[in-house]
Image (cartoon, rainbow, N blue to C red; front, side, top):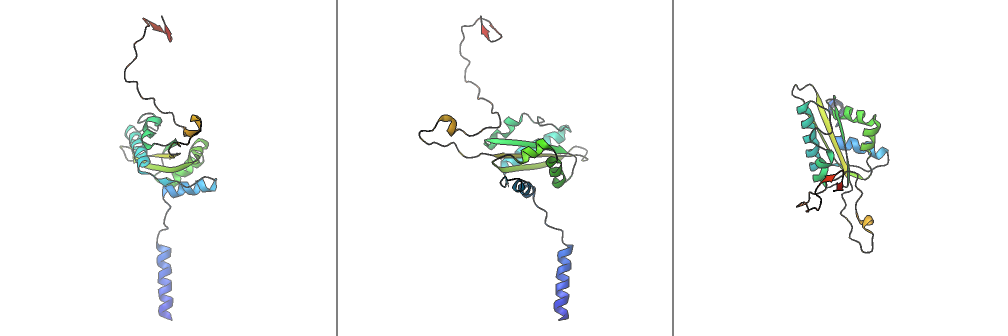
Length: 187
């Protein structure tokens, strides 16, 4: 009997001494989203890379800026998402505190609750002195392909786009009969 009780006590001590399994950043974001009526998100390697590039660029410049590596719409384009948002921060060494900071900010909170988001990328990088941690989170959704249903309007078959896309450059500029173009007028 003493052996069983001793084993039970030893097992309980091991469980109590073991650190609690912390939720991953995606699980933390998903928990927050579920409490507010949105769906879970999962980590995405493309979004992780986009977030890491942004975090590293901010850390290298020691500057908190959405444009540290260029405009967001260009950086997010490789993900192929219909809608996306980005949160950035610096200061905290752990994600849990950074997430709390974003939750307490209305604009960042809105991004965390991006409707139809299904994927997320999260990264951090330290500046050259190692004293400041920069964070970037990219959340995205609406990955469904365009529907090809018959009898639908064009507007019904195109995905919702919350991120402005850059237009493809024209192959050759067209010859113009204008000799002088001033304020958009041909003279």
